[in-house]
Image (cartoon, rainbow, N blue to C red; front, side, top):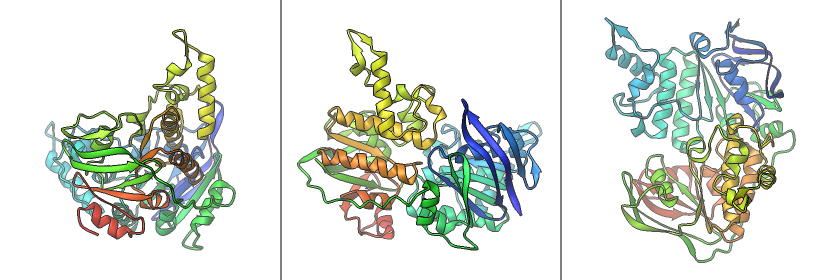
Length: 483
C-alpha cells in the first residue's frame, strides 16, 4: 500500500527547477529514505507533501487521495507531519505547551491540561520515551527535543512522519535509540520517511530508498528484495563511482596554539582543559548538553569566563546552529560570505562593490555552493549549501591570519562528495600549521580525520583518546565512565 505518491510533480524557484516531473510512490508501514546531494530536490519535494510549499504542477496523494490544497493545515488534517532539522520549538515554553500549541484541548472554555498530558504521555510511551512535560524546552538536550517533536506529531495523530537529518547531532547510542523508536512506529502501521546523508544508517534501517539528482528521480532501491551497499547508494547519488574514503594522514604537529586551562562557564562547563597544537586536528565528542555549547561560545568570545584562561583570542569559528549563529538568512549569499570582512573591499572609506562581487564569486566557487549566484537570499539555499557558506567564511579567516580554527558539525546536512571537499580544505589549513578543534556527533568522521579525540562529559574534558576505541567505549566515556 502507498502512503504518499507523487505524480509528475515539479517546482521551480526564480526559473530554476528544484524538482522536475517527479513520479514516485513511498510505501506505507515502512521506513523509507530520500537521498541525494545538496540541492538535489529532497527537501523541496517533501516540503510540498507537508504543505510548506505548493508545487507548480503535479499531484500529491496521501493514501491514494490527492491533496485538495497545499497548506500545512491540509497536510496535518490528512495525517502528515514533518520534523525539521532545525526544531520548531519555543525554548521559553514547557514541553507540554509546545506539544499542544495550535491544537489545545478545551473543556469548559479552558485548556484541559490533564487530557493534553495523558494524550502526549501515550504518544511518548508509543516511542518508548520519557520526558518531563513540565520542563522548559530550553532545558532539554537535543535528543529530548527531537523526541518531543516526534511526540507532537503523534499527538496530532500523524500517520506519515517525515524527518530531515534526524541523527545529525545525535550520539551513536541516541541514533540507535531513535531508529528503534521509528521502527516501532512502523510496526504500529505508520509510514516514516527520512532524509539522510548517513548511508550506513540507510542500509541498516531502511526498507526502501529513493535517490534524487538535479530534481529528478534517478534510482529506487527496495532493500527487502535486494540489499544494497553504501557504495551502490553513493554511486547512484553522485552519478559516478563513490568518492574514495579519505584516511587521516600523519601530521607533524608543532607547539600548542589553542590552549584552554581550567575553563569554567555557567551553567555546565566546570573546569575544561585542552591543548591543540599547530598543525593538529583534534575531535571533540560528547553527549549534547555536557558543556560543548558553553565551550565553543567561550572560545569565540560570546561568553564570559567565570574562571580559567583561553588563548589565543584570534580564532576562526563555525558554531553549531548555522541558521541562528552563523548566517543572516534574509541577506544575500554575497553578504554572508563576506560578513565581518568588508574592510578588505574598502577604498578611501567606500565599499568597492565590484571587488565585493569578485571576492564573493571566488569564495562561492571554491566552496562549491549551488547555485553559484551570490545575489540570491541565503534562505533559498539548501541546508548543506548554507553550511558551505559558514565553513568557507571561517577558512577565509584562517587565510587572513587566524591561528586556530574551531568548527562544530562541519559536514552536518552535507552530502558525501561535498563533505570530502570540506575536509580537504580543513586538512590544508592544518597542513599550513593551523590548530583545529572539530566538534561532531559523527564518531566515524572524527576517527577518519582527527589526530586524536577529546571527550567532554559533565562539563570537563575527561581525556584525549586514540580513534581506535569502539563506539561503545566512546559512549561510556561520554557518559562519564572510564575506558
